[in-house]
Amino acid sequence: MKVKCLPTRKGTRKPVGKKSTEGTATYAKKYASMMKNSKAEYMRARNFLPGGVESNFRHLDPFPFYAARADGSRIYDIDGNEYIDFLLSQGAILFGHRKREIEKAVTQQLKKGANTAIPTELCADVARMISCYVPSVRLLRFANSGTEATMHALRTARGFTGKDKIAKPEGGYHGMHDYVLWSIWAPKMRGSKKRPEPTPFSRGVPEAVAKTVIVFPFNDIEATYDILHKERDNLAAVITEPVMANVGCLVPRDSYLGELRKICSELGILLILDEVITGFRLARGGAQEVFKVKPDLTTFGKALGGGFQMAAFGGRKDVMTELLSSDDTWPPKEWPMKTYHAGTYSAHPVSLAASGAALRLMADDRVYSRLRRISETFYPGLQQLIEDRRITAHVAACGSMGHIYFGAREVRTVREALNTRWDVLGEWGMECLVRGMLFGHPKGEKMFISTAHTRGDIEMALEVADSGFHAIRL
Image 1 (cartoon, rainbow, N blue to C red):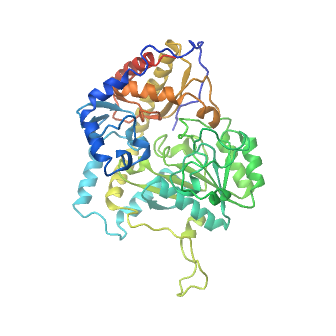
Image 2: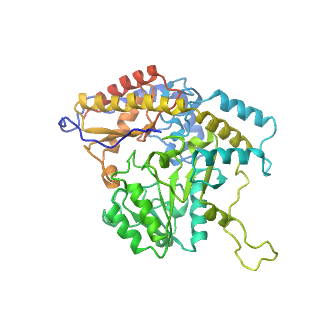
């Protein structure tokens, strides 16, 4: 599967200069006027939910807007406003909202019952398809979210190796559990760019956990090697996103992933590819198919569930059998007798039905060729508009995901990405939102394409994007 990745590229025009004040924040009054029902719902919801939302990431200033329904490439809010959706449930929606085949599978399963906490035939059916599409996954287990998947994958790696420490890239997001809630983002990261140190992202995470976390600089293979080599006797696993989506769309450069694979093999460290976002989106076989890297373990989520709560982790057979007991006697001769994984809602039949339907749809090569055609029109189109308006920014894209880095001509590292103009990205996103376009999270987030997007959608999206560029002109 050929997937086009557009690394951050140098602009061809000179910057205009300081940001123009004309048209700045023109969205504010319009947002308030078009979101009256959302404001009322916010006033009600904040009595029961911190910030009126169920996730910190979903809060907006001055208040969030609330969705009423979604269909195809569109989202409709409770005020009746319509948006073309490029957020797509943060990448989870690959086929557009309310895909008929997925709805049918879910409805049929609901007639049989919801959850029994007993294995079903769907478990092996879905696992077989995942293993077929992603050959590095010989055995797998299901979970409910990307956070659960990475948590269990890391625990399995520690159990298998008998080592406690894990390594993650600076700027990498791997869920909300304590062991990975480090060096995601901060006004000032700890350590140097070649020797980053764990920087806390949240209160409530014990500082003692930092002693079990090693941080390395993505795309700097020499510094990565030095760090991993120094900690090799204590490291159970390296976990990384193959494309750094938390900082936009930072593509691996200079065969970084392939070299990282070699380093992990040389040092006896397990390599975990976090494909929660890239899995089944960049290609049927995920980023590991695109970049030709074979990890020891992989985590999945988002597109795997077809819009429903679904995640998984899996990989080498010898590593995954760490979850099984080697001693069936009771009481066991050794304790703990295995690395533990469980969950009442793991492999939920309704989610498995949705996942199975989505995976069957992915078997058609036209899915990925369509995503590629749309993406190769949309993302270069954004870049051209940027250059026509002489804005200092560029578009980085990989497959059907992309991001705009404002205020920089080239981005190769995480620290460069974090130092771009995220404030301008958020302003542009809000300017486009009030014009009916949801380009990722409106306060600054990557964009995704679905098979439901049409040529007309892309034409409208580029028109609105250009209006947004004019409003925030740099």
